Length: 478
Image 1 (cartoon, rainbow, N blue to C red):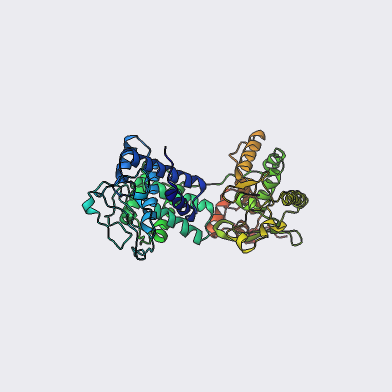
Image 2: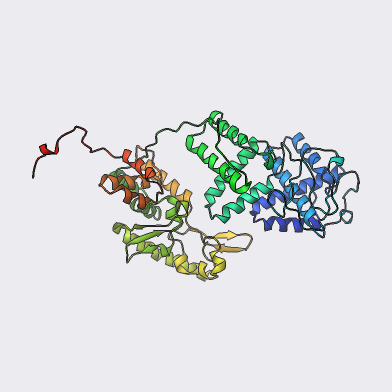
Protein backbone atom coordinates (compact mmCIF):
# COMPACT_ATOMS: atom_id res chain seq x y z
CA UNK A 1 0.00 0.00 0.00
CA UNK A 2 1.52 3.27 -1.12
CA UNK A 3 1.34 6.39 1.01
CA UNK A 4 -0.61 9.43 -0.12
CA UNK A 5 1.56 12.24 -1.49
CA UNK A 6 1.93 15.05 1.01
CA UNK A 7 0.32 17.41 -1.54
CA UNK A 8 -2.83 15.29 -1.17
CA UNK A 9 -2.69 14.07 2.42
CA UNK A 10 -2.08 17.43 4.13
CA UNK A 11 -5.04 19.36 2.63
CA UNK A 12 -7.29 16.29 2.87
CA UNK A 13 -6.49 15.84 6.57
CA UNK A 14 -7.07 19.55 7.12
CA UNK A 15 -10.46 19.26 5.39
CA UNK A 16 -11.49 16.35 7.64
CA UNK A 17 -10.45 18.26 10.75
CA UNK A 18 -12.41 21.31 9.64
CA UNK A 19 -15.53 19.12 9.62
CA UNK A 20 -14.92 18.22 13.31
CA UNK A 21 -14.71 14.52 12.49
CA UNK A 22 -13.41 12.20 15.19
CA UNK A 23 -9.96 10.70 14.83
CA UNK A 24 -11.27 7.21 14.02
CA UNK A 25 -13.51 8.62 11.26
CA UNK A 26 -10.61 10.59 9.80
CA UNK A 27 -8.52 7.42 9.84
CA UNK A 28 -11.21 5.49 7.93
CA UNK A 29 -11.61 8.20 5.27
CA UNK A 30 -7.86 8.54 4.82
CA UNK A 31 -7.54 4.76 4.54
CA UNK A 32 -10.11 4.60 1.72
CA UNK A 33 -8.48 7.46 -0.14
CA UNK A 34 -5.19 5.52 0.05
CA UNK A 35 -6.93 2.43 -1.35
CA UNK A 36 -8.39 4.54 -4.13
CA UNK A 37 -5.00 6.06 -4.90
CA UNK A 38 -3.37 2.62 -4.96
CA UNK A 39 -6.16 1.27 -7.20
CA UNK A 40 -5.66 4.08 -9.73
CA UNK A 41 -1.89 3.54 -9.79
CA UNK A 42 -2.24 -0.22 -10.19
CA UNK A 43 -4.86 -0.14 -12.97
CA UNK A 44 -3.57 2.98 -14.76
CA UNK A 45 -6.47 5.32 -13.91
CA UNK A 46 -6.13 8.99 -13.13
CA UNK A 47 -7.34 9.63 -9.51
CA UNK A 48 -8.29 13.20 -10.43
CA UNK A 49 -10.91 12.08 -12.98
CA UNK A 50 -14.52 11.55 -11.89
CA UNK A 51 -14.92 8.36 -13.93
CA UNK A 52 -12.27 6.59 -11.84
CA UNK A 53 -14.60 6.43 -8.84
CA UNK A 54 -17.24 4.08 -10.35
CA UNK A 55 -14.46 1.72 -11.42
CA UNK A 56 -13.06 1.74 -7.89
CA UNK A 57 -16.49 1.03 -6.37
CA UNK A 58 -17.03 -1.80 -8.87
CA UNK A 59 -13.74 -3.31 -7.70
CA UNK A 60 -14.91 -3.15 -4.08
CA UNK A 61 -18.13 -4.91 -5.07
CA UNK A 62 -16.16 -7.64 -6.85
CA UNK A 63 -14.15 -8.12 -3.64
CA UNK A 64 -17.44 -8.43 -1.74
CA UNK A 65 -16.76 -5.47 0.49
CA UNK A 66 -19.67 -4.62 2.79
CA UNK A 67 -22.17 -1.94 1.84
CA UNK A 68 -20.96 0.20 4.71
CA UNK A 69 -17.37 -0.06 3.48
CA UNK A 70 -18.44 0.92 -0.03
CA UNK A 71 -20.30 3.92 1.36
CA UNK A 72 -17.27 5.00 3.38
CA UNK A 73 -15.04 4.67 0.32
CA UNK A 74 -17.50 6.65 -1.79
CA UNK A 75 -17.70 9.42 0.83
CA UNK A 76 -13.91 9.62 1.19
CA UNK A 77 -13.26 9.94 -2.55
CA UNK A 78 -16.16 12.39 -2.94
CA UNK A 79 -14.57 14.59 -0.27
CA UNK A 80 -11.29 14.42 -2.20
CA UNK A 81 -13.08 15.48 -5.40
CA UNK A 82 -14.80 18.32 -3.54
CA UNK A 83 -11.50 19.48 -2.08
CA UNK A 84 -9.82 19.53 -5.49
CA UNK A 85 -12.74 21.26 -7.20
CA UNK A 86 -13.10 23.97 -4.55
CA UNK A 87 -9.38 24.69 -4.29
CA UNK A 88 -8.21 27.84 -6.08
CA UNK A 89 -4.69 26.41 -6.14
CA UNK A 90 -5.37 22.77 -6.93
CA UNK A 91 -2.74 20.09 -7.14
CA UNK A 92 -1.44 19.66 -10.68
CA UNK A 93 -1.72 15.93 -11.55
CA UNK A 94 1.32 16.20 -13.80
CA UNK A 95 3.49 17.13 -10.81
CA UNK A 96 2.69 13.94 -8.89
CA UNK A 97 4.64 10.80 -9.61
CA UNK A 98 2.59 7.81 -10.77
CA UNK A 99 -0.51 9.72 -11.94
CA UNK A 100 -1.60 8.57 -15.39
CA UNK A 101 -2.30 11.36 -17.88
CA UNK A 102 -5.38 10.98 -20.10
CA UNK A 103 -7.85 13.31 -21.76
CA UNK A 104 -10.86 11.10 -22.25
CA UNK A 105 -12.40 11.59 -18.79
CA UNK A 106 -13.73 14.80 -17.23
CA UNK A 107 -11.27 16.34 -14.81
CA UNK A 108 -12.21 18.37 -11.75
CA UNK A 109 -11.21 21.98 -12.29
CA UNK A 110 -10.84 24.81 -9.80
CA UNK A 111 -13.48 27.48 -9.47
CA UNK A 112 -12.67 31.03 -10.51
CA UNK A 113 -15.89 32.24 -8.92
CA UNK A 114 -17.69 31.57 -5.60
CA UNK A 115 -19.41 28.22 -5.53
CA UNK A 116 -22.95 28.55 -6.92
CA UNK A 117 -26.10 28.48 -4.76
CA UNK A 118 -28.06 25.25 -5.11
CA UNK A 119 -31.24 23.97 -3.48
CA UNK A 120 -31.04 26.60 -0.76
CA UNK A 121 -27.58 25.50 0.42
CA UNK A 122 -24.51 27.56 -0.23
CA UNK A 123 -20.88 26.73 -0.79
CA UNK A 124 -21.22 23.01 -1.40
CA UNK A 125 -20.76 20.57 -4.25
CA UNK A 126 -23.34 18.46 -5.93
CA UNK A 127 -22.96 14.81 -4.90
CA UNK A 128 -20.89 12.83 -7.39
CA UNK A 129 -22.76 10.04 -9.11
CA UNK A 130 -20.97 6.70 -8.59
CA UNK A 131 -22.84 5.07 -11.47
CA UNK A 132 -20.61 4.70 -14.57
CA UNK A 133 -21.59 7.21 -17.23
CA UNK A 134 -20.13 8.31 -20.52
CA UNK A 135 -17.76 11.24 -20.38
CA UNK A 136 -19.89 13.16 -22.84
CA UNK A 137 -22.71 13.34 -20.29
CA UNK A 138 -20.43 14.99 -17.72
CA UNK A 139 -19.44 18.40 -19.06
CA UNK A 140 -17.23 20.51 -16.84
CA UNK A 141 -17.61 24.26 -17.02
CA UNK A 142 -14.45 26.35 -16.94
CA UNK A 143 -15.83 28.73 -14.32
CA UNK A 144 -17.68 26.32 -12.07
CA UNK A 145 -16.66 23.88 -9.39
CA UNK A 146 -19.82 21.82 -9.88
CA UNK A 147 -19.93 18.58 -11.81
CA UNK A 148 -23.23 18.55 -13.72
CA UNK A 149 -24.63 15.10 -13.00
CA UNK A 150 -28.25 13.99 -12.70
CA UNK A 151 -29.30 12.85 -9.19
CA UNK A 152 -28.63 9.16 -8.64
CA UNK A 153 -31.41 6.77 -7.71
CA UNK A 154 -28.87 4.58 -5.86
CA UNK A 155 -25.32 4.85 -4.59
CA UNK A 156 -25.24 8.63 -4.09
CA UNK A 157 -23.04 10.30 -1.50
CA UNK A 158 -24.71 11.37 1.76
CA UNK A 159 -21.70 13.24 3.12
CA UNK A 160 -23.59 16.52 2.95
CA UNK A 161 -26.58 15.00 4.77
CA UNK A 162 -24.54 13.81 7.74
CA UNK A 163 -22.53 17.05 7.90
CA UNK A 164 -25.72 19.09 7.91
CA UNK A 165 -27.34 16.77 10.47
CA UNK A 166 -24.41 17.31 12.83
CA UNK A 167 -24.64 21.07 12.39
CA UNK A 168 -28.40 21.24 12.98
CA UNK A 169 -28.12 19.08 16.13
CA UNK A 170 -25.32 21.23 17.54
CA UNK A 171 -27.15 24.48 16.76
CA UNK A 172 -30.06 23.29 18.89
CA UNK A 173 -27.75 22.00 21.66
CA UNK A 174 -29.34 18.55 21.58
CA UNK A 175 -27.72 15.86 23.69
CA UNK A 176 -25.04 13.49 22.33
CA UNK A 177 -27.53 10.64 22.74
CA UNK A 178 -29.98 12.40 20.45
CA UNK A 179 -27.23 12.90 17.87
CA UNK A 180 -26.27 9.23 18.10
CA UNK A 181 -29.89 8.08 17.72
CA UNK A 182 -30.74 10.41 14.82
CA UNK A 183 -27.48 9.62 13.02
CA UNK A 184 -28.15 5.90 13.45
CA UNK A 185 -31.66 6.12 12.00
CA UNK A 186 -30.40 8.26 9.13
CA UNK A 187 -27.82 5.58 8.28
CA UNK A 188 -30.51 2.88 8.37
CA UNK A 189 -32.74 5.02 6.15
CA UNK A 190 -29.83 5.55 3.75
CA UNK A 191 -29.24 1.79 3.60
CA UNK A 192 -32.97 1.11 3.09
CA UNK A 193 -33.14 3.54 0.15
CA UNK A 194 -29.87 2.16 -1.24
CA UNK A 195 -28.23 5.57 -0.92
CA UNK A 196 -30.73 7.31 -3.15
CA UNK A 197 -29.77 10.92 -3.84
CA UNK A 198 -31.17 12.92 -0.93
CA UNK A 199 -32.81 15.36 -3.36
CA UNK A 200 -35.03 12.53 -4.60
CA UNK A 201 -36.22 11.40 -1.16
CA UNK A 202 -39.98 11.56 -0.62
CA UNK A 203 -42.56 10.91 2.08
CA UNK A 204 -43.30 7.58 0.42
CA UNK A 205 -39.72 6.49 1.21
CA UNK A 206 -40.40 7.32 4.87
CA UNK A 207 -43.70 5.44 4.84
CA UNK A 208 -42.06 2.37 3.27
CA UNK A 209 -39.21 2.48 5.79
CA UNK A 210 -41.54 2.76 8.81
CA UNK A 211 -43.67 -0.10 7.49
CA UNK A 212 -40.50 -2.15 6.98
CA UNK A 213 -39.55 -1.59 10.63
CA UNK A 214 -42.99 -2.67 11.88
CA UNK A 215 -43.60 -5.63 9.57
CA UNK A 216 -40.16 -7.06 8.77
CA UNK A 217 -38.10 -5.95 11.77
CA UNK A 218 -41.04 -6.17 14.22
CA UNK A 219 -39.77 -3.27 16.29
CA UNK A 220 -41.70 -1.88 19.25
CA UNK A 221 -43.99 1.12 18.94
CA UNK A 222 -41.54 3.34 20.84
CA UNK A 223 -38.69 2.34 18.47
CA UNK A 224 -40.82 3.10 15.42
CA UNK A 225 -41.79 6.47 16.90
CA UNK A 226 -38.14 7.30 17.52
CA UNK A 227 -37.35 6.46 13.89
CA UNK A 228 -40.23 8.68 12.75
CA UNK A 229 -39.00 11.61 14.87
CA UNK A 230 -35.48 11.20 13.48
CA UNK A 231 -36.73 11.24 9.89
CA UNK A 232 -39.04 14.15 10.63
CA UNK A 233 -36.01 16.11 11.83
CA UNK A 234 -34.03 14.95 8.78
CA UNK A 235 -36.63 16.21 6.30
CA UNK A 236 -37.60 19.48 7.99
CA UNK A 237 -34.30 20.69 9.44
CA UNK A 238 -31.63 19.02 7.29
CA UNK A 239 -33.18 18.61 3.84
CA UNK A 240 -35.52 21.60 4.28
CA UNK A 241 -38.45 19.67 2.81
CA UNK A 242 -42.11 19.82 3.76
CA UNK A 243 -43.24 16.86 5.81
CA UNK A 244 -47.01 16.37 5.74
CA UNK A 245 -49.15 13.58 7.10
CA UNK A 246 -47.75 10.10 6.49
CA UNK A 247 -50.48 7.74 5.35
CA UNK A 248 -50.55 4.02 4.71
CA UNK A 249 -47.94 3.14 7.33
CA UNK A 250 -48.09 -0.14 9.20
CA UNK A 251 -47.82 0.89 12.85
CA UNK A 252 -46.24 -1.22 15.57
CA UNK A 253 -48.81 -2.04 18.23
CA UNK A 254 -48.33 -0.10 21.45
CA UNK A 255 -48.73 -2.30 24.49
CA UNK A 256 -49.72 -1.03 27.93
CA UNK A 257 -46.58 -0.35 29.94
CA UNK A 258 -46.44 -0.47 33.72
CA UNK A 259 -43.06 0.46 35.25
CA UNK A 260 -41.27 -1.93 37.58
CA UNK A 261 -41.34 -0.61 41.15
CA UNK A 262 -39.28 -1.85 44.09
CA UNK A 263 -40.46 -1.89 47.67
CA UNK A 264 -38.51 0.08 50.27
CA UNK A 265 -37.19 -3.19 51.73
CA UNK A 266 -35.92 -4.30 48.30
CA UNK A 267 -34.23 -0.93 47.73
CA UNK A 268 -32.44 -1.10 51.09
CA UNK A 269 -31.34 -4.64 50.27
CA UNK A 270 -29.81 -3.46 46.99
CA UNK A 271 -28.05 -0.59 48.80
CA UNK A 272 -26.43 -3.14 51.13
CA UNK A 273 -24.91 -4.96 48.14
CA UNK A 274 -23.40 -1.85 46.55
CA UNK A 275 -19.98 -0.36 47.22
CA UNK A 276 -18.85 3.26 47.06
CA UNK A 277 -19.35 5.37 45.08
CA UNK A 278 -22.18 3.48 43.34
CA UNK A 279 -24.11 3.04 46.60
CA UNK A 280 -24.31 6.83 47.00
CA UNK A 281 -25.24 7.23 43.31
CA UNK A 282 -28.09 4.76 43.80
CA UNK A 283 -29.30 6.67 46.87
CA UNK A 284 -29.31 9.92 44.88
CA UNK A 285 -31.22 8.21 42.06
CA UNK A 286 -33.91 7.00 44.48
CA UNK A 287 -33.86 9.91 46.92
CA UNK A 288 -34.12 12.61 44.22
CA UNK A 289 -35.81 10.72 41.38
CA UNK A 290 -33.03 11.48 38.89
CA UNK A 291 -32.27 9.86 35.59
CA UNK A 292 -28.87 8.18 35.52
CA UNK A 293 -27.27 10.72 33.16
CA UNK A 294 -28.63 13.58 35.30
CA UNK A 295 -27.02 12.10 38.38
CA UNK A 296 -23.63 11.49 36.76
CA UNK A 297 -23.61 15.00 35.26
CA UNK A 298 -23.87 16.61 38.70
CA UNK A 299 -21.09 19.06 39.54
CA UNK A 300 -20.00 20.58 42.82
CA UNK A 301 -21.96 23.80 42.27
CA UNK A 302 -25.25 21.87 41.87
CA UNK A 303 -25.34 21.21 45.63
CA UNK A 304 -26.86 23.80 47.96
CA UNK A 305 -26.73 22.38 51.46
CA UNK A 306 -27.92 25.63 53.10
CA UNK A 307 -31.18 25.61 51.15
CA UNK A 308 -31.34 21.81 51.00
CA UNK A 309 -31.72 21.92 47.22
CA UNK A 310 -30.12 20.01 44.37
CA UNK A 311 -30.22 21.77 40.98
CA UNK A 312 -30.29 19.71 37.80
CA UNK A 313 -29.06 21.58 34.73
CA UNK A 314 -29.71 20.42 31.18
CA UNK A 315 -31.93 17.48 32.04
CA UNK A 316 -33.98 15.65 29.44
CA UNK A 317 -35.14 18.20 26.88
CA UNK A 318 -32.43 20.60 28.14
CA UNK A 319 -34.69 21.63 31.05
CA UNK A 320 -33.52 22.73 34.51
CA UNK A 321 -35.26 21.85 37.78
CA UNK A 322 -34.62 21.66 41.52
CA UNK A 323 -35.30 18.82 43.93
CA UNK A 324 -34.88 18.60 47.72
CA UNK A 325 -31.72 16.93 49.01
CA UNK A 326 -32.63 13.94 51.22
CA UNK A 327 -31.38 14.71 54.72
CA UNK A 328 -30.45 11.05 55.15
CA UNK A 329 -27.63 11.32 52.60
CA UNK A 330 -26.31 14.82 53.45
CA UNK A 331 -23.36 13.42 55.50
CA UNK A 332 -22.47 11.01 52.68
CA UNK A 333 -22.62 13.82 50.09
CA UNK A 334 -20.34 16.02 52.19
CA UNK A 335 -17.92 13.12 52.55
CA UNK A 336 -18.02 12.65 48.77
CA UNK A 337 -17.13 16.33 48.35
CA UNK A 338 -14.00 15.78 50.45
CA UNK A 339 -12.98 13.00 48.08
CA UNK A 340 -13.57 15.32 45.12
CA UNK A 341 -11.35 17.94 46.78
CA UNK A 342 -8.54 15.40 47.17
CA UNK A 343 -8.83 14.27 43.54
CA UNK A 344 -8.94 17.87 42.33
CA UNK A 345 -5.83 18.89 44.26
CA UNK A 346 -3.93 15.87 42.94
CA UNK A 347 -4.98 16.75 39.39
CA UNK A 348 -3.80 20.34 39.80
CA UNK A 349 -0.41 19.14 40.98
CA UNK A 350 -0.23 16.83 37.96
CA UNK A 351 -0.87 19.84 35.67
CA UNK A 352 -4.04 18.37 34.18
CA UNK A 353 -6.05 20.42 31.66
CA UNK A 354 -9.19 20.40 33.79
CA UNK A 355 -12.58 18.78 33.61
CA UNK A 356 -14.87 18.54 30.58
CA UNK A 357 -17.17 21.56 30.32
CA UNK A 358 -20.51 21.86 28.52
CA UNK A 359 -20.62 23.36 25.03
CA UNK A 360 -17.83 25.92 24.52
CA UNK A 361 -17.70 27.17 28.10
CA UNK A 362 -13.98 26.48 28.38
CA UNK A 363 -13.33 28.87 25.48
CA UNK A 364 -15.30 31.62 27.15
CA UNK A 365 -13.82 31.06 30.61
CA UNK A 366 -10.27 29.83 30.16
CA UNK A 367 -9.71 28.72 33.77
CA UNK A 368 -13.19 27.36 34.50
CA UNK A 369 -12.17 23.75 33.76
CA UNK A 370 -9.72 23.83 36.67
CA UNK A 371 -12.03 25.54 39.16
CA UNK A 372 -13.37 23.40 41.98
CA UNK A 373 -17.04 24.28 41.49
CA UNK A 374 -16.98 22.79 37.99
CA UNK A 375 -15.60 19.40 39.05
CA UNK A 376 -17.79 16.32 38.79
CA UNK A 377 -19.51 15.12 41.95
CA UNK A 378 -18.72 11.55 40.87
CA UNK A 379 -15.40 11.78 38.97
CA UNK A 380 -13.90 8.89 37.02
CA UNK A 381 -10.97 7.04 38.54
CA UNK A 382 -8.57 7.85 35.71
CA UNK A 383 -7.92 10.81 33.43
CA UNK A 384 -8.92 10.82 29.78
CA UNK A 385 -6.32 11.58 27.11
CA UNK A 386 -7.38 13.86 24.27
CA UNK A 387 -5.12 12.79 21.36
CA UNK A 388 -5.60 15.94 19.30
CA UNK A 389 -4.68 18.36 22.09
CA UNK A 390 -2.32 15.90 23.81
CA UNK A 391 -3.78 16.78 27.20
CA UNK A 392 -5.51 14.95 30.04
CA UNK A 393 -8.96 15.84 31.35
CA UNK A 394 -11.21 14.38 34.04
CA UNK A 395 -14.57 12.87 33.08
CA UNK A 396 -17.33 11.59 35.37
CA UNK A 397 -17.78 7.92 36.19
CA UNK A 398 -19.14 6.07 33.16
CA UNK A 399 -22.78 4.98 32.98
CA UNK A 400 -21.82 1.37 32.27
CA UNK A 401 -19.90 1.14 35.56
CA UNK A 402 -23.03 2.07 37.51
CA UNK A 403 -25.34 -0.10 35.42
CA UNK A 404 -23.16 -3.20 35.82
CA UNK A 405 -22.75 -2.65 39.56
CA UNK A 406 -26.51 -2.26 40.10
CA UNK A 407 -27.27 -5.33 37.99
CA UNK A 408 -24.83 -7.37 40.05
CA UNK A 409 -26.32 -6.05 43.30
CA UNK A 410 -29.85 -6.95 42.16
CA UNK A 411 -28.70 -10.50 41.38
CA UNK A 412 -26.76 -10.85 44.62
CA UNK A 413 -29.73 -9.59 46.63
CA UNK A 414 -31.95 -12.20 44.91
CA UNK A 415 -34.47 -9.56 43.83
CA UNK A 416 -37.23 -11.23 41.79
CA UNK A 417 -37.95 -8.14 39.68
CA UNK A 418 -36.24 -6.85 36.55
CA UNK A 419 -34.58 -3.85 38.13
CA UNK A 420 -32.08 -1.37 36.72
CA UNK A 421 -30.76 2.09 37.53
CA UNK A 422 -33.93 3.68 36.14
CA UNK A 423 -36.08 1.54 38.46
CA UNK A 424 -35.03 3.79 41.36
CA UNK A 425 -36.69 6.72 39.59
CA UNK A 426 -39.89 4.69 39.06
CA UNK A 427 -39.85 3.73 42.74
CA UNK A 428 -39.33 7.37 43.79
CA UNK A 429 -42.47 8.48 41.94
CA UNK A 430 -44.60 5.52 43.06
CA UNK A 431 -43.64 5.84 46.72
CA UNK A 432 -44.49 9.56 46.73
CA UNK A 433 -47.84 8.77 45.12
CA UNK A 434 -48.40 6.08 47.71
CA UNK A 435 -47.74 8.69 50.41
CA UNK A 436 -50.59 10.81 48.94
CA UNK A 437 -48.34 13.48 47.37
CA UNK A 438 -50.03 15.65 44.75
CA UNK A 439 -49.53 14.35 41.20
CA UNK A 440 -48.54 17.85 40.01
CA UNK A 441 -45.78 18.02 42.61
CA UNK A 442 -44.47 14.65 41.49
CA UNK A 443 -44.55 15.85 37.86
CA UNK A 444 -42.36 18.84 38.74
CA UNK A 445 -39.91 16.73 40.73
CA UNK A 446 -39.55 14.27 37.85
CA UNK A 447 -39.23 17.05 35.24
CA UNK A 448 -42.07 15.75 33.05
CA UNK A 449 -43.43 18.18 30.46
CA UNK A 450 -46.74 16.32 30.16
CA UNK A 451 -48.83 15.21 33.14
CA UNK A 452 -49.91 12.12 31.19
CA UNK A 453 -46.35 10.80 31.49
CA UNK A 454 -46.55 11.07 35.28
CA UNK A 455 -50.03 9.52 35.40
CA UNK A 456 -48.58 6.16 34.40
CA UNK A 457 -47.39 5.75 38.00
CA UNK A 458 -51.00 5.61 39.19
CA UNK A 459 -50.99 2.04 37.86
CA UNK A 460 -48.10 1.03 40.12
CA UNK A 461 -49.87 1.59 43.45
CA UNK A 462 -52.90 -0.11 44.90
CA UNK A 463 -56.12 1.79 44.51
CA UNK A 464 -57.74 2.84 47.78
CA UNK A 465 -60.79 4.32 46.09
CA UNK A 466 -64.09 3.01 47.45
CA UNK A 467 -66.09 1.66 44.53
CA UNK A 468 -69.45 1.11 46.27
CA UNK A 469 -71.66 4.19 46.21
CA UNK A 470 -72.65 5.48 49.65
CA UNK A 471 -74.39 8.63 50.79
CA UNK A 472 -72.28 11.01 52.85
CA UNK A 473 -75.21 11.18 55.28
CA UNK A 474 -74.37 7.60 56.19
CA UNK A 475 -70.71 8.35 57.02
CA UNK A 476 -69.76 7.95 60.64
CA UNK A 477 -69.65 11.32 62.36
CA UNK A 478 -66.69 12.08 64.57
